[in-house]
Length: 117
Image (cartoon, rainbow, N blue to C red; front, side):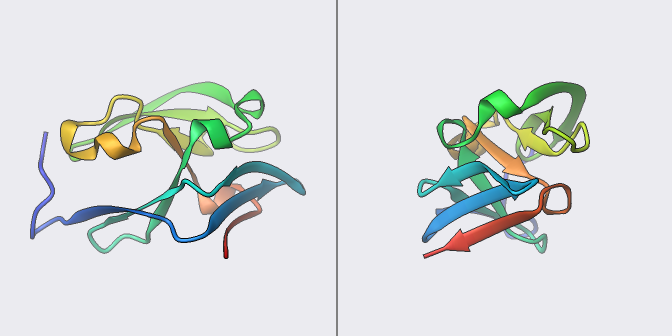
């Protein structure tokens, strides 16, 4: 387990506005409680509470990955999408507990991730 620091900063802040994720012309997530995670020089990622996502549209994948900063990630498929279109740190490391219970969507595997006022 690694801790974020000056050499690998990670910040988590409430997203200003509403985050809407669309796939196939349908809304699969819609939240005013999303979090923006900014990790080092990577693009920012929107983490959406599960309560604000269409969990009935997600199917758990067998794929898993590990991040030394965040922990083990589980993956989900969306209808008509790749098996690993969505990820979640279900039991993140202590420094990242804010993203527990949240989902992140790969931008290239959904039609849109919009941040609206």
